[in-house]
Length: 450
Image (cartoon, rainbow, N blue to C red; front, side):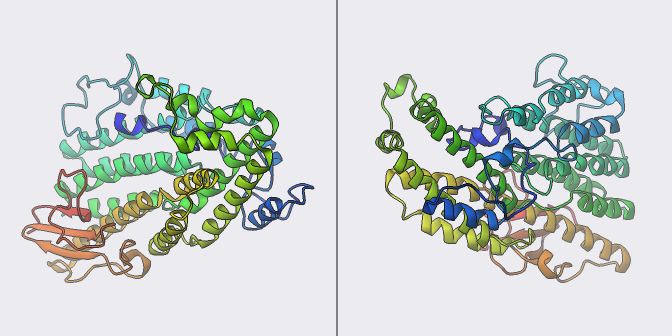
């Protein structure tokens, strides 16, 4: 999982990491006394359901939304002896269980210490002083990958020992962590980590299905696991937190001015020995223009307008992946026209907001493909043969990348359900389930179907 942890830092990314959203509950509150056009856009954004004001970020923390309580409950689910093992590789197939696993973290890094560390890093301290930097608070969200990593490996061990039903019970209980990371409104960081955790669990589930898919109890357990994952990913919800992080940026720049500009642009992180102290010309010009309060206000006005329009175009139904893709494409085209330095930064912020759409759609494909495969196996158990057509209907049957039905076919002894993917070409599904990092078609496969 290290490749997921070492993510490049971006101007808007670190500002998000401490926000647990307790601030989007009502609309219609006045956003201030300014009469600028920027403020008018802000009022419209408020009406659209985005955070109302900087002061919203100072509200008392909501116990129901804070990470501490659900994580404490999550930790209590697991037997103490399971925590003896350190974090395991998500690709591990054997060699664990009662043996001593290879540790990828610090010595003694187990579920108990991990949970304690997460609980000590609650956002409660962030909301006490939201104007402070959030640079050090993103790790606790990413650290939640370790329990999911461990539990996926635990499920594989049980499966290899001939206990697939028990393995699926472990995965089903582990979905609690995914649901904790996806409240009704999510951080963008939190949503991204939920995706990583969900992929770990679905990967383990498809392995169990490949080995024991003919077992009716495994089929039933797989459907229960899918249902337990909760709501699908939806970047529309994360935009509410993204918008709030921009409120933080605006407040810092307006109150601290020049002293905050380099922090806002992450200039200190872009300068290294190889750069010889030189900045990208666009960044350098943006740095200069942001010192002018009027230009700064104009930039935020354009950001609020762009964010509001994108937010309203994204469909409210999180299962409407194709609608989400069309909205993202539309705003990608609008973003491509932004060339001036201040617009360059607006474009960057908006692009970051909908960059998660591709990942969202891949996760929708995984969920739908897994369900289709399980239903196909159930049909074979009842009738003796696999269905001839995709055993899904409605939105669940839709490939979010094409707007058409997901492709369901048998290739030799492999049963495949897949999407044509972002290249918009059907490549036959031959590389679905391969070790390729970038398969041309996206989906899941059952092997040795007879």
